[in-house]
Length: 143
Image (cartoon, rainbow, N blue to C red; front, side, top):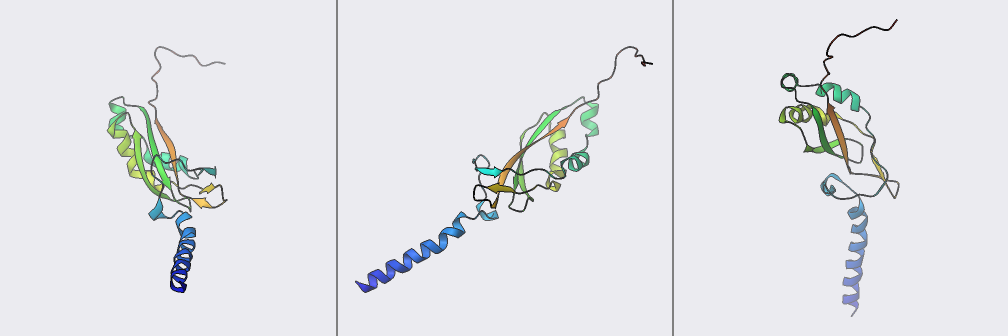
């Protein structure tokens, strides 16, 4: 009987010791792309304008008159760093290829969960590509 109690005590001790590790979110325990993770504060972009400038507007897309928005879902780790991404929608491959080349340079503030601890989180980022409209006809300068 004492052996059974000893084995059960050791078993429960292992379970209790393992639970804090299980609740921590590490790169090996990333949320699924469509998983809802409740947070107090979602990640905020730090250098989004710089990264969008690096992405630029592909010349070939401009020449073909392709514009629109590329929707990207980015996994942000506990330190606010990019982990991986997935293009959710794109008007054309030229635009998504441009986003794929530089989106990994984006930096965030980390998401803060309900226990006030940083956690991994998927965030959606739209990258807009808009052609400049050519004006038709004459224009006047107001004096």
